[in-house]
Image 1 (cartoon, helix red, strand yellow):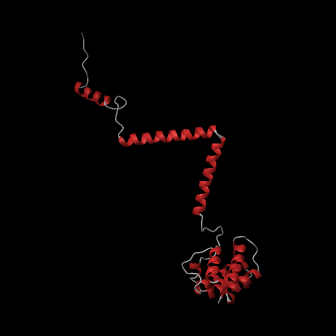
Image 2 (cartoon, rainbow, N blue to C red):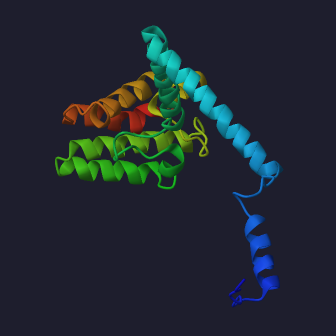
Image 3 (tube, rainbow, N blue to C red):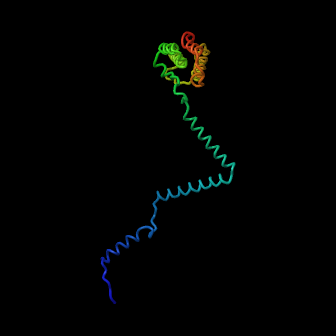
Length: 201
């Protein structure tokens, strides 16, 4: 019988064959504990999603329940993270920010805006003067960052004799800056009066 000589070393061929057969898909390799846990977790999540989606597809009531719960969760997150955020970029200074200037400086700015007919800016500066005056008089602490309603509540509690003027000025300020009501001289005068003589003891 005639034999064709091999062009490669038989030992090299055997070694290559062993290497090939030692790799997947020819062997059952152990995935290891981490891979095994991840595979099981993926399978569990797939089963849960399959069950939920199957229930939603089979029941309109359950589908609306899921939508309702998701909506409530989203609203809760929005309310949680939007507290203290102002819709208007021209929000009033907080008590801390207002107190960096004196109440007199804020009143002078309010008068300057009023002289130019800028009633909305005059009301804003007048309210800042009022808040700063309350800080200077010790009714509010400089560390307080408060909304108009919180300022009203603090004055009701700690300086009730000033409460009516402060509440009226806060209402004018909110109507103009948040309610977008047309600012006018009467509103400005009310806020400035509260920020000057009438707010003091």
